[in-house]
Length: 151
Image (cartoon, rainbow, N blue to C red; front, side, top):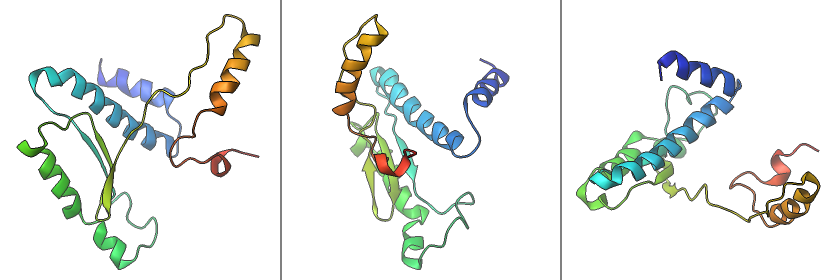
């Protein structure tokens, strides 16, 4: 694929605002997980980190206290990266470490299969099974129904 081909797909499928940023970040996570699977056969480990640091992109977006600002120092992130690069982490691969900063980090558990709906070739029959599966499905972490659905 050429760079122009890549760019045209991104331009067509991503909207302005934060969707492009979120898609890029999820793309990195997905890419890391798939590459970890593909390269595990030759002993290569691949992980992704999503640091919460003070950068040129985040500077000035909102006021942060001195205590929080200190927790956004890249030194906190470097410790995790150093450990992941060491022989001690040779068994850690395909992981996405999120919110890496001076308050700790999380390890993503995303993209797992949830409740299953039965297949049907009849659109009228699909709804019954889908409604049951939807009722049993949790919302994505951090996206609570009342905070993002329009009335």
